[in-house]
Image (tube, rainbow, N blue to C red; front, top):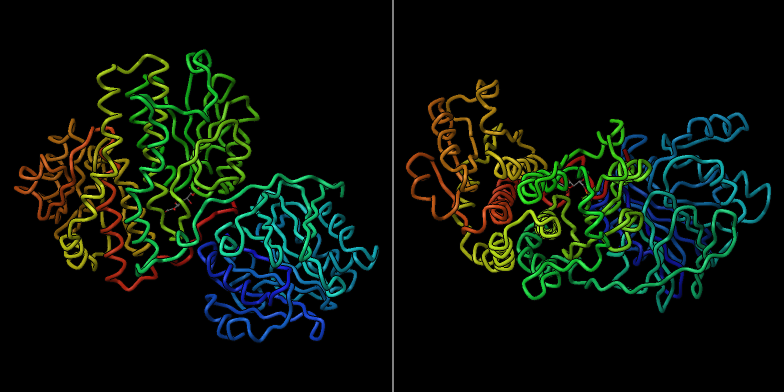
Length: 613
Ligand code: F6R
């Protein structure tokens, strides 16, 4: 939610800021803005409602703004509608301090009222502007920007990543962070701050991750970091191994399609290093056999698609481990007085590693004594750093707002972890263990084979069904869990109302919605329950539904006899079948959204990294 960037160096700042914002636009795209400082023109601020392109055109790709020091912002609106005034940067009343903010200032109203009583006039409805005004107030008191930032941080409550520039400090950029991501980049021609490494990898891979409560002062040649008492802190620097091309479309019309196509490779990268001599090896997981044997309950916590991975894993882990696994939405978990104790293993799944609800749920679980294991894609993200153990999915940067390759890599990694734990517990037969492991390794190849095939049939179905108002996804067991993801993909990018139902539950109410021509996507890829899936297809067909079925190649013929249209995926071990089944669902959503002329990579109202509650 919201992307911020800052640069100070020996090159014009504005084009660098725009370039970085373009790579972070998935974080929010309601409005965009930059503030750049130059010797001759002082602070120049340009901001506008709408996509970054509007801003870029307005300032001619940055050419209009002089100066080597600047900050930029792309917004996902929380406080105040998306308009020019509420867009960031926000500037203090005297026009000498500009800030960009990602997060939420919870006590902004109280602070705003206080400042208004002192005669300060506010321009916007945002919570963020209060920080610019408060900075001016404290700066006037102490005439030292670092000290003023420290004073402001002590007064505000909530989450933040800030980029701050001040007309009196022509060579310095100040940054601060609490509960919102912020990265420091050490470049040859200057230094950077950014919400996400993708914004700056074109310029540097040498980064450090700011911790909560830290303040950084950047100049063209140095980055000094302080704790909340303004005591200097030594930062550990690391090298990002993501490629610049990974954050570019590379000839594809959309990031989503590119990322769907990248799934075999992403799965290979996630799986290969973790299988050695026929065993799952999880070197980064520090759970002893004794601890694992003592686990009484496993919780899986996540949001959105990551939660859907948790749903698949619940079925698989319980099958493999014979231990109760509870999957809970992070936003519910944090307020449900969860029954977590020292014998609870709490697995949190998050692509971004920054989702606020997931982070808060993880902290709650830790507070109650649970041991936390994070499955995360972004190295150095907040969740990764706070969890007791972290296992990374190696999907690379995912730019499209709708997740595809991150989902797939989470799925296989959770399968590996389940197998690993089941092996420690002795609850999985050797033959089953070997069969799953062999099949995990052949997933990339099978998926590649599917993706190499002509997707004409899926495109045809998309053109046939794209006008439907409401679509149901039905399935049992793993197919139900996979249907949740299929349904979310469709609704988020094509704006078609869609629901996922456990097939057996239909007749308890929802089947009343099925009428002549209702589209039902029937999922029958889970071999042990294929016959049950067929019965449900017959049931909805009898009520007039048009059925688009998804099954495996060995059941294709049977399914074709009943369904109106059938897509078949290669057969793999039943526990892994969702990894292949989800691909046609992703493609179907993609092509439906394309037919409907939707903005596929940046669906309305959404943002990729949800750092607000
Ligand atoms: C849907 C999607 C979201 C995320 C959810 C959690 O395509 O991407 O539902 O899965 O916002 O995000 P992470 O995994 O970053 O915690």
